[in-house]
Length: 279
Ligand code: NAP
Figure 1 (spheres, rainbow, N blue to C red):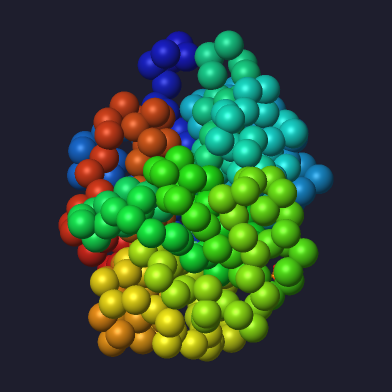
Figure 2 (cartoon, rainbow, N blue to C red):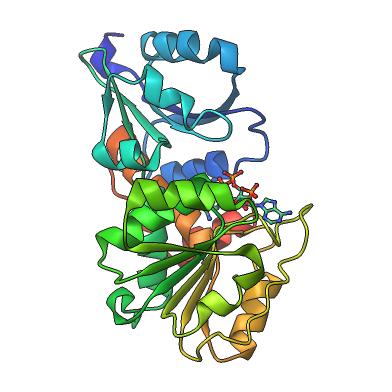
């Protein structure tokens, strides 16, 4: 079989990677659209990352998603890095080009925006400030995306204040840093509030930031999707906010890779959600 007749292969690379829902998602889409292809989880140690990525194209891989802990390291290995991946400082989608070069992009921010637009269709990011809790890789992607859609002001708060200060110097004057004890107060008058920390995730401490300042009608999004329905979302909804869970971001961030590798833009709809929830 010559190279062009190969069945396309793609993967998610991380360590650990067994928990990833991406293989189930890709398997669902491949079956749904009756496409030839395969998508597998590959557990790669940091020291082997460059060698593994160099070998994958020879094996028929056309690309890969990247997850913890390699999202930052792949930027140094890739030949072409998109502006948004460079700004975020991490990539989650690699394309192995026919000319042998590795192209790295970050689709987390686009996935975040698509999720809010789908589940809060009246969301107007320009109608007021946004508050972001957390300052890790996910927060960086969210902030880059919020700036791109024209949010007038972004308030951030993080347990480790220095990380939030770094975000401010990387992303500029639209950002202001609030002390961790002020994280609740920074939500005042915000049109958008995002938990981009791991608080509330299974195995992590509960999200206990007070929501008294939250404006009714604000769009509230938890990036945490295990559990799907978090205490933060329940509390926010009880206060009149529009609550959006984090699963949609996971589904939407995967769509560009699927399209590129397997040739079909997949639908991110209720059937897709149910397939992943039941997997
Ligand atoms: P990360 O880079 O490790 O950052 C973790 C963030 O959570 C940091 O801001 C950290 O604060 C904070 N944090 C952790 N434990 C905490 C605690 N006990 N108290 C207060 N803050 C704490 O991780 P990430 O990649 O940004 O991911 C963050 C969350 O987003 C995770 O739950 C992840 O599953 C979720 N996520 C979801 C999607 C999606 O598609 N829905 C995509 C990406 C990430 P410090 O700086 O003080 O450590």
